[in-house]
Image (cartoon, rainbow, N blue to C red):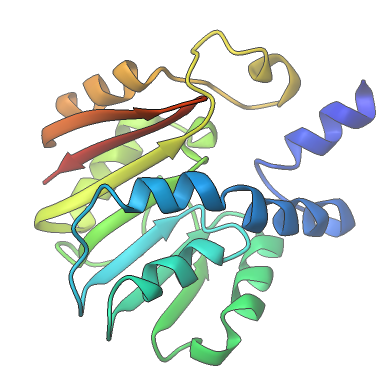
Length: 202
C-alpha cells in the first residue's frame, strides 16, 4: 500500500524516475477526457491559450491542433513535468509553445492575456483554490473561457485517502466556486462513466 500511495501521490508533483513514468501515463491516459472536454468549446484560430498543470505536455499539442496559428502556454509546479512537456513540444518550443515552472496560485502572466485556460485533472492539487480561480480570471480576456476537466467527480472519493494532498470536488461544487469567483455562464457537462467538465466565462 505504501508503494501504491507513493506512486499516486507522485501524480501531484512528478519527480524522478517514477514521475517520468507517471507523465508518460498521463499523456496517454488523459487523452479521452481532454479531447471530449475541448470539444465543448468553439475554439477559434489564432487564440492564445494556457494549460495549467500541463504535465507531460500532450494537452498543449491538442490545443495547437484545434487552433491554427495559436500560441499555447503551459505551466506546471513540477520541474520533471516542465522538462517532459518541453521535450514533447520541442519542435514548436519558444515559437508557438511556451512552458514554464510555476503555481496556479501566482500565474506569471499579464492581465487579459488568454482566450482560454484549461486544467486537466489538476484542480485537486491547487492550494487555496478560490485564490487560484481569481488568478485564472485575471489572466483571461473578457469573454475568455476556463475549462476544468476531471474524472474524480465524487467529493468523498477514495482517491483522497490514497493520494496525499488531494482534495476532490464535485462538479457542482466547482461550478459554485466559479460563480463565486465572478465567472459567468458557468455550466457542468458530464459523460459516462465518470467524466465531467466545468466551463466558465469571464
